[in-house]
Image (cartoon, rainbow, N blue to C red; front, side, top):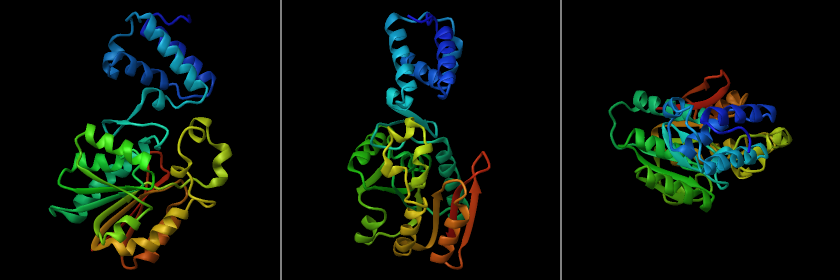
Length: 288
């Protein structure tokens, strides 16, 4: 077997192998933390730990599978998001760090826009793994949260995450805002990370993404804006008089989505917020 006797040697081998094959070199650390049930500080403190044969075998196999295209999160079975571990599989989009920024800014804007208001109704549309809905509920327990997804399989994963993390979220199967409209529901806050990748970008995506994550959660039609356009038709039917809407968007889509919101809701405040890398990432619209 490769020279992977200690944690240090195994991580060094994995890093070189991953870089050589144009994969994220952090995958080795993620897998090792999972196999040894350690956090990062524990792993750093145990660099000289001698691995058991089974641990070496599973580590090498996992890194090799990742090189061949399997997301490391599918090998581990989870991904960290906003300080919590979320179960993931091929039925849901793997939560991204950029989406943590949507959660952070949503919480901040709720605080500023609604102040001390208590029982706010919030909907997360296209919830996938439930990462956004569960995180918002966990961070602000007084929110009344419902989450919608068209995929029953995705909702199964989301329900597991909510249960494991102790978040009381109502999950509803359906297409965009139709479940809210049909129930006569109106909300104070609506957030969504809808599919926004243009179909033309498919060939340029890594096989880790395009071969293992649900296309229904990735692609937003030819322009990437299809779901935002659909939202604008339905949003006026479900938002209360005073509201907050927050979308994650793709790079360069800020002005287009902000313009749609201004068209759907004249006399509102619309703001494009970049992510930590300076790219358009979120659009928020507030009224009242």
